Amino acid sequence: MPNFNNELLEFLRTGSTSYTTIKYIKELLIKNGYQELQEANIWKLDNSKYFVIRNDASLIAFNLQEDLKEDFKIICTHCDTPSLAIKPNPTFFENGYLKLNVVPYGGILNYGFMDRPLSIAGRIITQNNNTFTKTIIDLKKPLAVIPSIAIHQNAKANTNLDLNTEIDLMPTISLNKNNTLESIIKKELKLKDSITDYDLYLYPTINPQIINNTFILSPRIDNLTCTYAAVKSFINNFSNSINVLTVFNSEEIGSNTYEGADSNFLIDTLKRICATKNLDISRSLANSFIISADNTHARHPSHDELSDHTNTPKLNDGILIVKEINGTTTGITGAIMKKICENNKIPFKYYTSRNDFATGSTQAGVSLKHLSINSVDIALPMLAMHSSEELIGLKDPYRLYLTFKEFYKIKFTLKNNKIFF
Image (cartoon, rainbow, N blue to C red):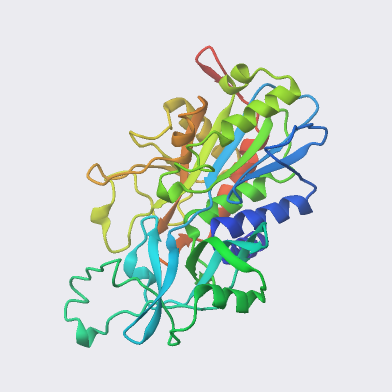
């Protein structure tokens, strides 16, 4: 487990945006012998290990053996995290300070992003004559900050912190009104070409930390912890099933993007695999299983009133089988998930939220609009979700990794209303 946790901390450090996260996963897959496919090309699947990327921000990888069954085993996560997206025409000079015009991406915990060192990462489009080039960047060093109002000037700061995102969350980057975002980026990267457009985000540069050998405190725990466990379990894990890893962008904003879960990316990839390997897509989907893995809320140490009566575990309680009324978990898929955990002696519990709190959709739930597969929603318990730093139990990500490994290896069949292992 120590090696796994060290690698996870590095992943949390590196995955500053969906673009840098996918770049990291791509490099890891290539290092392990995976071949990149292009959606615009004809696929000839002679090798056994492949991946495809859409819009630099979502990735699907799959493992193939010679004696394939007609089924897919899919793990689905997301790699985007709540942050601050930089708007076009971003710099403006106000009250003697050069500031950036930003918009919250996803449901950020507003005050959690104040008084934190922020850097810039994402994708830029540069132009040289009539040639446009896209580049994934991460400036890594602190370049901006959102200062809070001192307690002496805000008597309600400790009782009613009502932040206006158009006023209170505009980061300060300089005292020089002649600076521009482009000039800052070009200086840091030593670029000569002009930047014609971008998809850039501010993110906290705080390093992940292990607290008292019990917790991990880090930015981007939601959902990079599940994503890393999935990636780590998937690499070089073969079975008679087609093992698939899916990492989507855009979950935090509803998944309705070109590369999000509510697109044709997954179903089209599965169709192309079946067509190339002469498998029947309808039969394959009917035999398939998908795990949707994300994080959810742990029981809070000071606010038990926020929890469900019987189904809100604490940190380090193990894998959570999420069974919400608007989720994808059924009695059948929940039973399969229990068996997978029991095979590795992984602790698990059910999770449901309070009835008076809204719950979001899962990646599998969104994907099922486009393909019908038996599905289960699982999660890891965490605290301070969507803040600039989040908290998770130290043991749980490794447990999830072991669970995913077992899922890719275990053989089970659904037939005549029975489950055979």
